[in-house]
Length: 137
Image 1 (cartoon, rainbow, N blue to C red):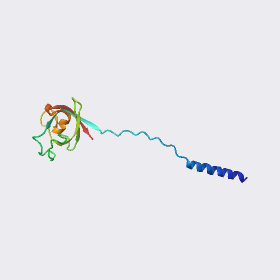
Image 2: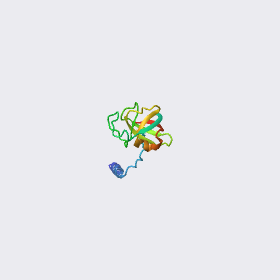
Image 3: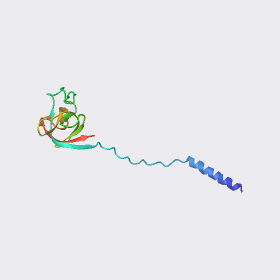
Image 4: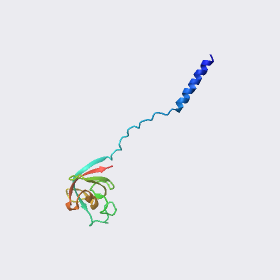
């Protein structure tokens, strides 16, 4: 009778030893969701113009110096520091600007862009373009 428990014990130890030598089955990585796109909020649409050399290096309403080469803009009501995507409705080009000034003070215009921002979506020869504005979070 002692013979049988010894066989069972030996068999059990062998199985446990062999189980420890096996490699686990590789887990397939779970598909990851693509990174969330920045959320945008439609602000409005209208006409955009630019201001450049005549205002270069002068103080803006936010207190910083205007740089016509920076991607900044003037808006009547958006808080300073707000990032806005400006989309040229004619060609689909867009630029993200930071609001650092107040304006435009011409009826029918929704935003004044720095010269660099305007040039990235249209030719400065056009002077005024139709745009759509989206707030970027």
